[in-house]
Image (tube, rainbow, N blue to C red; front, side):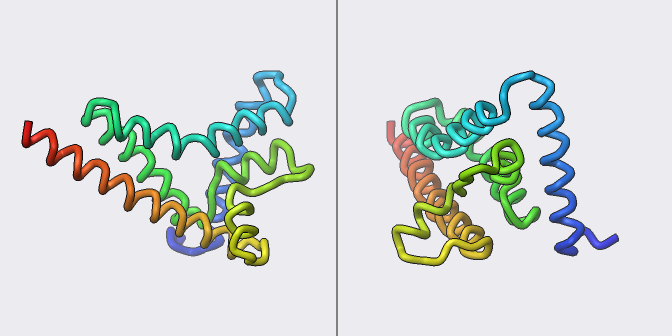
Length: 144
C-alpha cells in the first residue's frame, strides 16, 4: 500500500465523506438543509477566523490557525476538499463549488483541476495574510 498513491488518497477522502455523511443523515434533518448549513460554515470560516486572529487572545489564534493548517494538509493530501464533497453528496442539485465564483471572476473554465488550484491559491493567500497578522500581533505583544 502506497500512502501517496492518488487512488488511495481519493478513496480515503470518499471513506471520510461517507463516514461523516452517515452520521449527518442520522440527525433526521433534510439533506438540502444540512448541505446549506455546511456550505454556510465552509464559506464564512475564513472571514470569522480573521476576526479571531485580530482580536482573540494570541494562544487561541494559534490554536485556530493550527486547526486550519491541518485542513490545508488534508486538502492537499486527499487531493480535494472533503467538505465540498460532503456538500455535494448531501445536495448535488445545482451544486456550486466554493471556488466557482473565483473562477468566474477571472474567466477561467469551471472544472475539477481549476477548482482545486483556485482553492489552493486562495488558501495560500489567506495563510500569508494570517501569518502577517499573527507576526504583527506577536511583535506588538512584545513591545507592550
